[in-house]
Image (cartoon, rainbow, N blue to C red; front, top):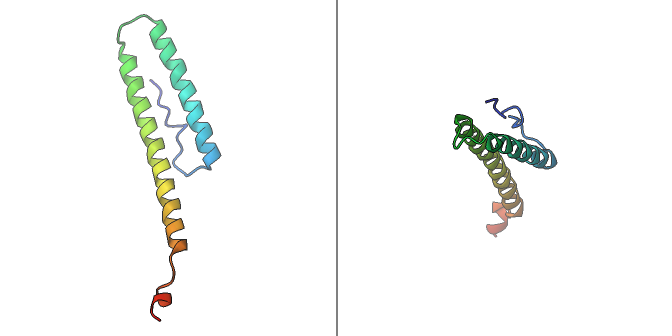
Length: 89
């Protein structure tokens, strides 16, 4: 089964681009599932490969979203802190 790694880019993308990629991946996964279920086989090997690919893809997206959130939160916290010299008086 061809991996969807091409859709998940290594470089950070804009939030809009990331959301569009997630939408596209969900649609691709949905179509792949429909085709596998249409074959009528109870649990084809390709189903296991697809589920592994789905899991890995969504984990990469989760990591990227979490990283973005941590970076944004860290930036917000740093920008709200008063300089150390303000407390020395």
